[in-house]
Length: 95
Image (cartoon, rainbow, N blue to C red; front, top):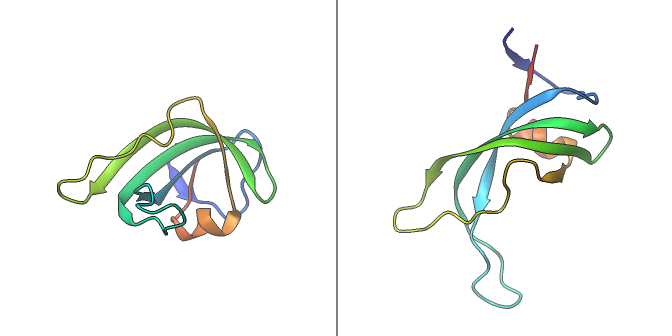
């Protein structure tokens, strides 16, 4: 069993991808700043666009110096991601 590229996830698949870590905006309508990268592993609950996923793990890969990583998601959370976001993050499927 190994990780292989995935472009069409199906329900029950386990996926892994990179995505940015965002800081909370510093103004009421301010744009959040990217402060690092994280590796997310999750199981597909419902395929489609967006894909619904159940988070299995989140690993911070890099974070800007002097910044504390926000805890945006944790194991067991249900999240949604567009297929384009997964593709941008080099989505891999566990075979």
